[in-house]
Image (cartoon, rainbow, N blue to C red; front, side, top):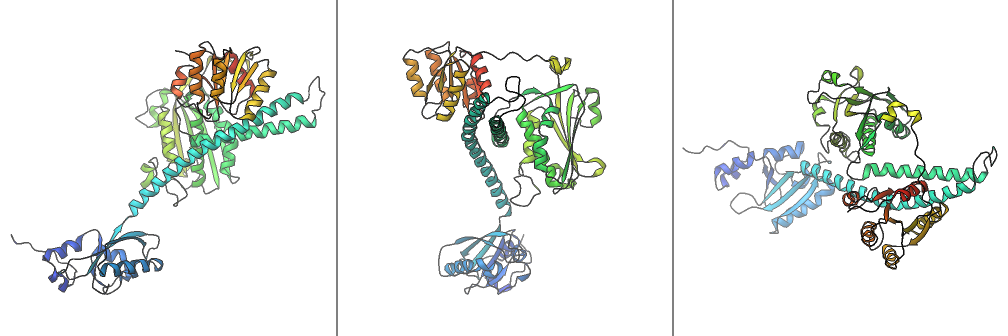
Length: 525
C-alpha cells in the first residue's frame, strides 16, 4: 500500500526539497511550534503550532525576533546569526510579543543541507514547567521561613526568658495593692507589671509564629474546642480587620476532643484568613461549634463518617463562594485562585492534613442562603473529664510543689538567663551551682559533687543538653533531669520522652521551673 501524505500548508518548493514528502506533513502536525529559516534569517514557513504561538502578527518572510518582546529581540537575532554562521545550537527563554507575560524556551539550530532551509526555530510551551518550578520555589521558601522562624524564636525566647524572669523578681519587690501595702500600688509596680504584660504578649507572638512554622509530632490533649476557639478571638479580630464582623457561637456541649491544640489553632486561623480573602476585607465570619450525636450523623449526608459522637465546627463567610468547577480541587496542595505571589496554595491542604491526622473530617459547601462558603469540620467527641462535668468551679488546685533545699546544677550558656534562674531558684530555697556549658557541668559532676536535679538548656556549644542528660544519668542514676529550650521541642524527642525527661519550652515562669524541679525524676532505663 502506497503512503499518501496528509495535505499541509508547507510551501511546495520546501516540500519538494525534503528527503521524503511525508516529513513536511509530520512537521506540520507536531504539537511543538516549528519554523524554518532561510539563509538570511527570515521565516520560510511554520507549522500550525508556531502560527498559533506567534499570533496575529504571523507571516512568512518575517524575522523570528519579531515574535518576542523588544527587550529580547536582540538576543534572538544574535542567536540566529550565530547559528547561520555555523555556530552551536542555542537555547533562550524569552517573552512573546503578543503575550509578554508568557515565556517560551526557544531553540535555534542549523538544518542539514538539502532540506530547503538553513535553520530551525523551535518554541516550547513551558507554562506547566514554570508553574511546577514556582510550586517548588514556594515550598523551598516555606521551608526556609520555617527554619528562620525556628532560629529567631530560639534566640527571642532566650531574651524573653530573661526579661520575664527579671520582671517577676522585680514584681516581688514592688507589691501591688494589698493588706500590707495599702490600697494603691506604687509607680514601680505598675511599670514592672506593664513590662511583664508586654513580655508575655511577645511570648504569645512567638508561639503563634511557631504554630505556622514548625513541623512536629502531634501533641494530642483532651481539650475543650469551645474554649480554644474563644481564646483565638483577639487574634482573629486582628487578622480579619475592622470591616469584617466576627461571630463565634458555642452552646455548652457534652464532649471534648483529643487533638493538638496548636495545630487546631492553625486550622481555625487558616480558614479565617481564607475567608477574609474571599470576602475581600468586608463581610461577616461566623464560627459555630456544636455537638453532633451519633444518631444524627447519618442525617449529615456524608456516608464515610462513622456513627459516633462528634464535635462540629462550622466556619461560614459571606464571600464570593467556590465555583463548582474547582470545588473538587480546593484541598489539593498548591491549588490556589489567588494571583501569582499572593498565595502558596498550601492553606487548605494543611487544614485537610491536620483534620485527617486528628481522625476528623472536613467538607465545604455553599454558605447559608447560597451566599459564601461554609467549611464544616467534624472531630470525634470524647467524654469530658469527670471533674469538669461535675462542677468547673470546685476543681481543686493542687498545692504548689516545694523545691526548697534541693541541690540544683544549672547549665545555661546564655549569661542573662543563667543569672535570672539562679537568683530566682535561690530565692525559692534551692542550693544552686551554675555552669556555662556541658563540659563544665560534666567536670563538676566528675569532681564528686552531688545534686538532686540537673537543669540544662538543650542547644549549647559542644555537647547538647540531651547528651549531657544521658551522660549525667550514667554517672548519677538517682539525679532528676529537667531540660529547657527556646525551640518548640527536644531533639531526639522520642528517646528523651521514653526515658522520662521533663521538658520546658522557653519562655516560662519561675513557678513552672520550681514545680519541674520539685517533681523531677531520674531517667528510666
